[in-house]
Image (cartoon, rainbow, N blue to C red; front, side, top):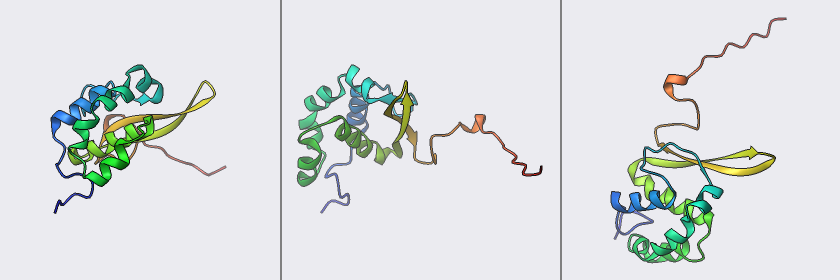
Length: 132
């Protein structure tokens, strides 16, 4: 009986790197933001469809049917999130408004980071003064 509720085989770095390339990213430390438009430009959906059989070999059969059928951009991001989690990374999503259009912006982050915020070197202190 597998310990993981999602995978029968724990994802290795080769499959994770192949997924990252499909998203137009270099590696797990690549901190660039990406959007669904970037995914379209990188042909992410098509690349993941080509990888479907390889991805299926990692998933438990019942989970493979859920995540790998009727693939969409949203499911592709979910697959990325699932495969990078064992490496202690997460894919954070943030809704941004660009030229009046709301779009999801994603970024890879180590799990020890709380949120999309300035790096430790850029951290700022704020003083709020309520005196009049």
